[in-house]
Length: 106
Length: 252
Image 1 (tube, rainbow over the protein chains, first blue to last red):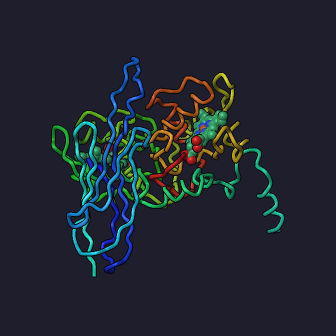
Image 2: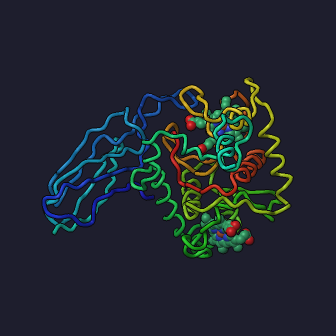
Image 3: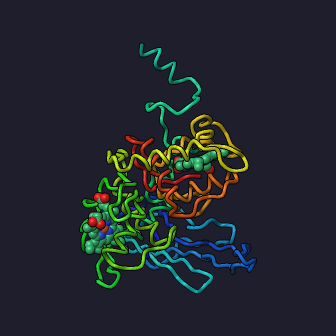
């Protein structure tokens, strides 16, 4: 199953401000809901998101239970060098979803 | 003459919207929600479309066949298909909707156990197949075998139901454009299914939407897959004939 969609410009000029967007498929189960039998459904959210550019962290976020399912994040950075932009979403259940995109900077 | 016509169309609508005055649910949405639907990178339903594309190529079942084994490239073989569903299925002697058709292929052609209604797998494949018709006009089949089922769907649409004793028509034909609580009542054109509903935080089918409206008037909703729901889908698609498909849509 494909679990994430990321958008990064494929090319940019050095020094240009670029927009990066990332969306991961996740239920973001709050831990406050109950199932049909009244049992609490355990919390299971993405609690942390990290984006690196050519190995360096450029953006990270801590997420909380009130955030909707399939969280969408958009942020900007300055294009510095050609390389890989990598995305990681860390789930409460220990899982890590990952995605990468490449950018060519001229 | 053109002026008179414009005046007539501008009058507040009572009764079913004239063909020229039909509007998709997306026309009633906030600009932000429209923007979310329009941009594939922020439309969450695209996650389901991407999943569906993967399942399309995955061999399944006793014979190890993928959808692609028989149907090849979906961007060609499935183009326009969603626009003419529900269609008559020889196998059951009744109309099937697109999800039902996909499950028929799973059962008889792969063969593999059919997906559960509203399962992520079925919604993803349905969204992927329907996505191939995005932008195309809804083209209800002219198959006379469908007529009695479409007529039944029309009768269900007019019938008052639930503790609130309201028909679908009472809201969607007589009161569209008006406010109901926090929502605007749309004309109930199924232009964008399966779609991502912000309230559901998930993709859901047209049947799920119809069941929601039934619960809304405190009626007992038909079970997923019930013939009545398929007949309603058939009627609604006929009523929306010629409107553009937007799948996968986003709704509030």
